[in-house]
Image (cartoon, rainbow, N blue to C red; front, top):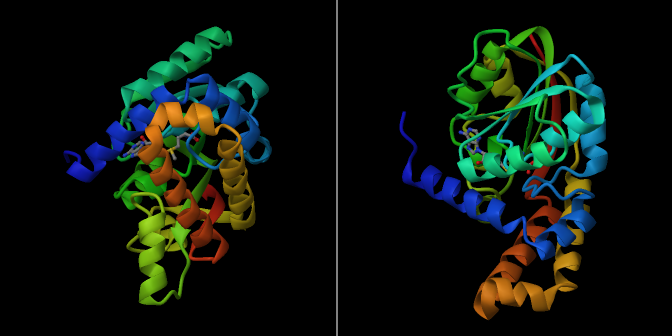
Length: 271
Ligand SMILES: C[S@@+](CC[C@H](N)C(=O)[O-])C[C@H]1O[C@@H](n2cnc3c(N)ncnc32)[C@H](O)[C@@H]1O
């Protein structure tokens, strides 16, 4: 199926973000927010990445598939720190191209592979991988069930997938629901909740962790870090652009703090 105009616009927006993320000021901000400088766009911190690596059992000889890899966070970090082999996939070429360059710079050419591919149509034979990860990716795409089914197909029997996702808190009134839609990622709405989608696609939940407080703390660090770089950011975004960015950030932190948006990590096993 060809992507909708909204999906195409998002792919272009991510491509721009990945290019911009290489600028010194953005790297500086990212290091103080997430503890890394791969150009990450998820809310995965270094501490969370270390925990996820342990849950996935990453190490030498493990074949990991990372979906929606952007410019390489956290997949390249895991290749470096655990010695696993990683297939990075995403839609914007620009992000993967930056990831490939970073892999070469970090001496990871032999263990990292790259494919421009949708998570809903993975170009790999059944059972190709020992582990799968994705960081805040399902909230950035409409075909959530198809992606979970595709992941199920390419993972070997009994292996694990760990992923984080931002979603709309259950039981909101109409006004708060709309606030969550307006301040959340572009495809934050889901037709069914994640446990139902996982059950339908053959996954068994081993652990489900609420990490909304960490999400709020990480987001606050972003706002503080950007407040310390106003001159460089003004040059980058212009006065109106930066003001708009700051208004969006304030709306988002309010939505997270008020509990209309939540973030969870699922650790699931291929049934
Ligand atoms: C929040 S970003 C996460 C990027 C990176 N993994 C990180 O942690 O910084 C979500 C990513 O999902 C990707 N994405 C959106 N739709 C996708 C699809 N159908 N298949 C694969 N990736 C997709 C976007 O291009 C984007 O790079």
